[in-house]
Image: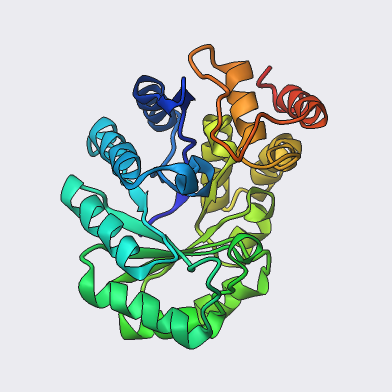
Length: 293
């Protein structure tokens, strides 16, 4: 069961290539700061711009550097079922604890298609799966009834969900509809507080990349039912959550990391570019508000 603050790690680049040295340093910093698991090659990791070889190397380095200190939930999603299976098999081989698998994007499968896609991965893969629903990016929406049916059919495989639907009622839908242990993780930092109050157990976070200790402390306060401390930390982080999306993600995040960590380069891969001046100003203000600058 996964819980707590789980950063969706950025993939650092330098001169067009994966900056392995910076990534290893990022992994160590996240673990030392209290992150409870790591997600390489998710949306924030610019996985859509990585070749399969690069994708696999990022996961491999993450597992190697984590060295069993925290679980690694490897980003394995694809709009091609066979490619998702390829990622899952590689991740299993190199020691990942689970796969984060996004609903297939662009080809817009029906709910029946989603059931078939995820069922096929459950039957042919060999890793636990954390579902990932982010309709704003995929267009496809993984409905609660589909999530509950997958968990009913394959309770040992579908162990949780990263829910970035923005619909807080789904936390209750999933909690009431799934009998097996099932980790509900927010995919939206700014909704993590009410998400946890409804039954969530953590967040796969963008903000945790740049504020790992604050995010870990916030999740610990939620788990301890210390609402006063959770609110205080949430207020401290709240502007930063929104600043991370003032321009196309993860550009504002990479700017924030470059501002606060001298070993991190701001570089992104096309079609993403560095964030605009408005976003930079928002990030600067939010970093000051959080006490990070």
